[in-house]
Image (tube, rainbow, N blue to C red; front, side, top):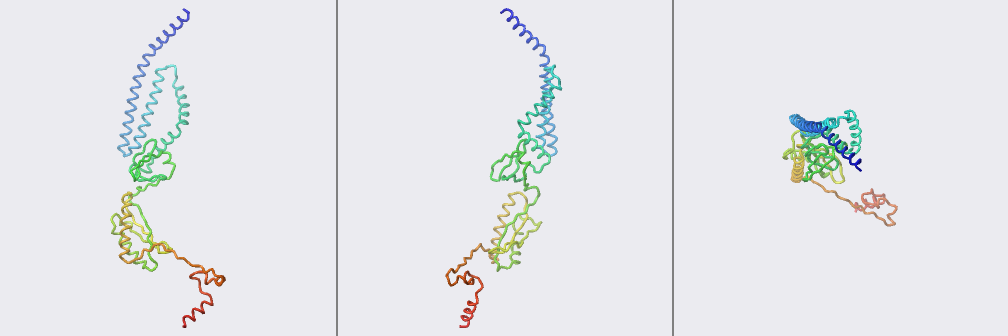
Length: 309
């Protein structure tokens, strides 16, 4: 029993001596940690400032975070080498490599979103303030973060879309160019003057607020419908959705009023019901089966005699 007590006391004394022997290393490591922490924040601030001057705020924020954590990781390696002198830097790097692979598999989705965010910010297919369509979502880009892109929809909601989804799918950028074309179709009656209708339409559209003079509006005869001759009306506005929507509303209202005032018919779809004669007498006479079928020989003679009387 006394021998075991002596052994325990010796171990405690050895630990205390080891602690005091490593105490200078701990103090140095603490100082190095403070230095690396300050350097990390300094590098972050410099990167953000450089990219802010270039108008690339989002990219600057993302790269600044990468730079900061890179400096912090380097500081951890240096501190580990100071506190534990027996550990070689090569061993730390090899351990870090194996650990990075494991972390990569565990956080694959997060890393994919980070890389996609970096590529989006670097290539800039769209920017903050652009109006885009991603899948079933449409709205204004609020912010592009390291993990996700934030979109404010037109009805006042926020959609958070992972950057990997944004990068891997087709994106429509409605505000990529200053102007945007809109179109509607209008049907006029078959008995109306097509050229007159076109003149009324074009003169009306040119006077609508929000319609751009160049490129000029168009009114194209597009289709011979069942009840009308359909014209496709095209015009250009500014690409902002507010201008597009409100200008379209003004165009529709102005065209309706102008065409009505010009006595041009705006027919609605009509349906003609043809009655089939299913009596035995008419069964073999296709001329009597439905309306509009050419009359048979007997009917021609009957019609001629009726006309003579």
